[in-house]
Length: 239
Image (tube, rainbow, N blue to C red; front, top):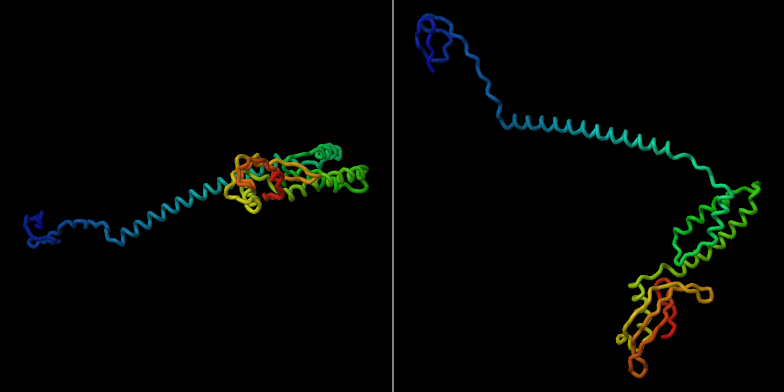
């Protein structure tokens, strides 16, 4: 690159700072800095951007968490305000509900049925001897105990009402050991299980229409009443 002296117009090679003829000083040109494009610089730039993004995200999460926390606190406070303290039931209320429970009847008892009895029996048991309703409360509580005892026993003895598949499994298990030619037998139809009492003893019952061979090798159709407990046939009437 050639430089021309502004004083004597002498031309000379750059980067001279003074003219070789007249000695005038040339103006110093600013050196342009090159952008850093090394891999290290790029990596540092990326790390800086990632750190900045992470900081922004952290601040956002913090704001969301603080908002959720404030919402939960407000919700809990509102729930506590709305949940007014409830007074214990009076004896008259317990008596009314207890007399209704004494008439309670269901084809199939479940564990959840006993919760409503507990809601009456537990407060009745908590009535002190000094209370004027103590004796009447004890009598009502005994009636409720007598009511729930056979309900619980029945639920344990019977088990849940068998489904259609469970009925078939129970029939197969029972008849396999009692028919002369089980493999030739055929279930034509059977009823859903329903509850009956035999001498005050509960059973699930399903009437099975069975086609099977008799002792002479001929096929006959008969209705067999199957008595079931806990998904097993315990007695068959008409086989």
